[in-house]
Image: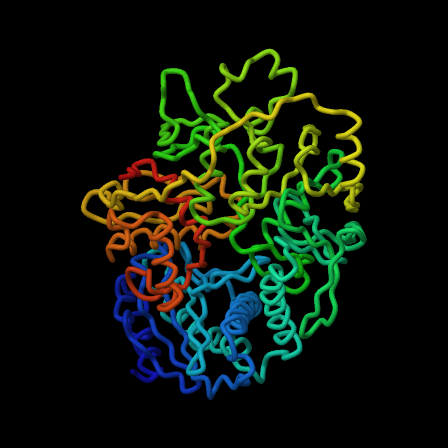
Length: 571
């Protein structure tokens, strides 16, 4: 550990030298008295990935009350709050761009509307460690040492002082943030007690500001959510007291209504309810069971030995559907595979929107059944299998339907959206079904009991490009994995590029540690990975030093990434 004066002197000495002279700072720690500053990685030039800077502060100096350390949920919420505080204070105290490339940049992986476990900040009873990125300043490729001194000795200390010391934080805001997150965790656990898969609190603001913004719509424009009295449930929470809203029960639930009346908005809120949300998001008390999976058709995806026979059988050419493979799947086969893969990973709730589904997988009406006989149609539509999923496998379905009224015959309940206001339409839908029979014949498909765990072949995973491991995110929707790209664009519950980055390095970690060993099924692989992440922390997957850019993905998205690896082979 060196004194901070040594850092000041080094920056003085290397001023106007070549950019590589910044490397003298790498792997050093400096004592700033109130906190310690480490520099584990220094960028090679001002246009490269910014340098990594760690700020370490003892818990005694930080001064947080013991209440904030009581459980993992509170710790996660504090980490999230402090990351946001650092981001806000960077904007407040940073002078801004200095010189070439990324010179003068200071950033921290900034959270969105959700509160998800991250590596940008670690909050423990012993210390706080913030992991930020700094663009060391240069003119061209010439060191600007004096500007670097301003960053290290003026701006960063102000950011630390106003972000990480309890005495300088508005406790009311912090406490509200933590309590809100904790109540969502409690509420999600209570769903099972009332036989629910999701809950939407009265007063929630579900519409978003715009198609490119996840922030809530202005409350003067948005319609606050209000539950139909027939479907209303109530919970008692430790800080908010009694809270009521729509309880979506296990079974088959339809969301119906005219176009632009809020059907997909409700489904989107339920899909995002697998995550906790920040105060003021409008969806703080919209919670969904953690394993819910949004399903859609995905034309062109690769499928490797998936048993889609409950939905598709007797294909022309005697193609096998118990171990179905395709390099370029159709809408129906891709959606069938997506459902089966979700079941393999243990989901208890399927979320489906008619708009993004393959029509021929979802429904075959009476007229089409008359024209195309069953012996000529290999597809058993979802409408004929959805009841089996619930009765035999306890898999619930929440389905947005705008045009297929035949689903009234199989629905346990129907919720109609009318100008963003829900009302119960179950009785009306059942009466319509009695008075206007669909006349379609139920088609028998294979049972789901034959599903088996698929075992990935480790030799089909190659993260190398040449001699080097080359795994990195390309935005939120793509992972470069060696010489190929994994397309994640259809995973609507994958929210952050940090999750994409984490998935790539989780796969490398699993290979290096023989978790993908040719013996474990995909489900067993994910169980082992996530047990280790729980015990060792998300930072354990970093190939170098703890990386501050990771965001924890769900096992469902990590498994989906493996299934979309185009080189994947199943043993």
